[in-house]
Length: 183
Image 1 (cartoon, rainbow, N blue to C red):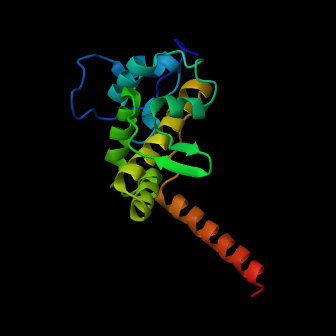
Image 2: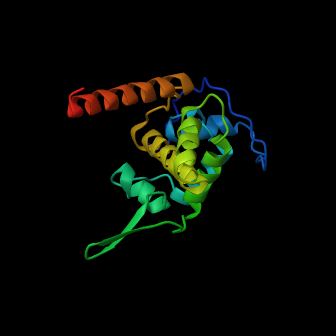
Image 3: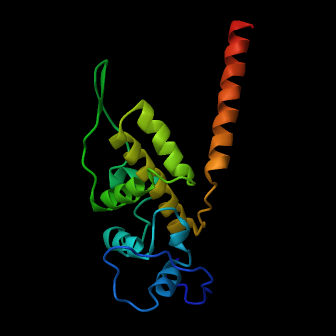
């Protein structure tokens, strides 16, 4: 997939607030590199994409699935088991790519209109802020992997759609509980 020179760039670049590289036409070069606008993913801009390419490289064939990629980034929960004793281990460090995804997710934590931000805030209420950021970073890493390997543009569903899905889940859980208790 790398090196699609005939891709037409119609999107506008996201602003880079800190450490903007002095490269002219950076957005066009980044889009032509993989043929996908990585800037469509919430929280990622062209500079973040350059940093991620520096860590992961352009060839993603070494990761057969998205689960392999998120585990390599250190964004999956770790379980340790000996006999019948199961212990969930937190605090296992991420590599540099995982840290980049966590930085992007932390920026989305207080976003008003983005579904990943809402997901993280809900998780933060039940668990911990570090767990919520790691879960949001995992979602960003999955979107990045799908964009790079399959050429799928990320489409932000928005907060309204996310809240609607949560309401549907809640109603179906209540229906299952009512059927179980024959109410």
